[in-house]
Figure (cartoon, rainbow, N blue to C red):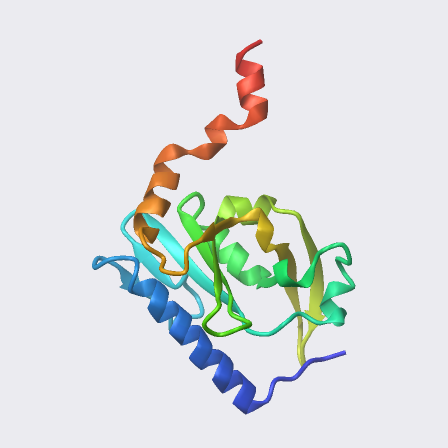
Amino acid sequence: MTYARTAHQRGTDRERGQRLETYVRDHLGDFLVDNSESTQRLDFWVPGFYTEVKGKYQEIGDRWMKHWPALAEPNAFILDELSVRKALDKWPHAYFVLVDAVHEGQERWFLASVAEVACADRARLNRKTQRVFKGKWILNLAQFTELDASLTGLRERVMADITDLPWKRSDCLVAAASV
């Protein structure tokens, strides 16, 4: 089954996406390169890291949820595999800002490194378009760090995460070091 979006729906999606990207850009500081109009690059480059902004604008229906029936819809998020691949190319310095914007004015904001996204529990499926299949991942937002909607300290939070290297504190590494 193909799922065609109307020109009006695509325009509305674009406007919503630009609103979220502008909001994130305004919280990343002065020294950044804005690639949000590019289909080939991640949305923003700040010296030290890259950021990709993705939004969810409507509740996810049964045709998606049937692939992961145990996941509650409010925490379900569809991410295109191409974005993950682009971000993996910038590992470990790529981050996603994921926004549940189903109810405007009550958005839920999440931060996830590309490593967290790549290792997260997920359901993967191919969505058929008019011409090709597109890889889609259904993710559980509860697995990622929820941010305050003000995005205060977003840049500092990402820089601290990069500096901290949380993988060095992995339980399996800590246990092996104590043997």
